[in-house]
Length: 377
Image 1 (cartoon, helix red, strand yellow):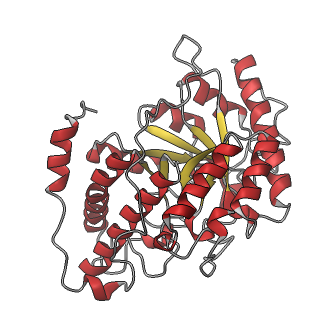
Image 2 (cartoon, one colour):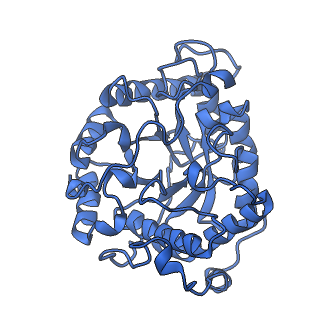
Image 3 (cartoon, one colour):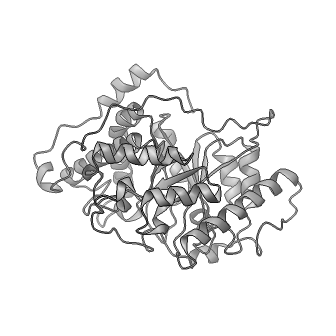
């Protein structure tokens, strides 16, 4: 991948992709085509990531987070307290657990989220499940008004993410990106690329990285593999647009997660950890040692976040056992380099069939009504 142009030139190039407001935009998704509520000036901060290097290009420490939606209606402040007590470094937030629309979350509530996390020594790693709520969002819809309003809301999400201290936005949302009937893959691809290009000036301004998430074919018919997502990342070629690798989704496509990490080491900025069963690490047969070893070997310096789709074991138990499993796998990955199976799992390596039988993104929860007041915990 070629070098990135200077920031001033990038802004000029990206600004040229901004379309005029379609006449039907205001009617396409009522209530979305407006500025965010009280967004502050962007938080200016260096983002060095994890500095734990081993001097040989590898990483000596990994930072772990979990996704908050498995705690359902528990206030964020209590979730932060639990995360800190267990030993996590950060929390990843699903916006629909905070409000129906992030435009309903005022500046005081945004500051409270950021401050509450900091009080417990945690980072807000970012956001995921971006387009589940409000209803009607669709990233690459052929209708100009729907697409425009979705792009506006993505920019609102970027501002919200930056305001609460987040660094990453996971672009998954499988049902809001499908290739629609009578549409071609190529046209959908072009509209998707255009949508992200239009958001990147805001992402750069707020220091947020959009991470494109490949999801398996049972969830979406568009961008199923790390290689497909990597193609989009390389076409856009912007430092605020990177790749996330999701363990379960990669396994479900019959692919080797460690190999994908090595292949796309230069553009991978986030990891979702989950067992092939759809639960957390340690609740099934997926061996995380080769995965963690690949992250060590490639010098990965981002977060690894636990995302589960089966909450039946209880959120706190899932969070605790997942972290124990990942830390054990991380230690084992540093101690063994010969491919010897590790005791940091409960069975054999997870299979594509295990993943195919697992719950899917969007299946575990549906967007609740607006949770006014929940943002401040």
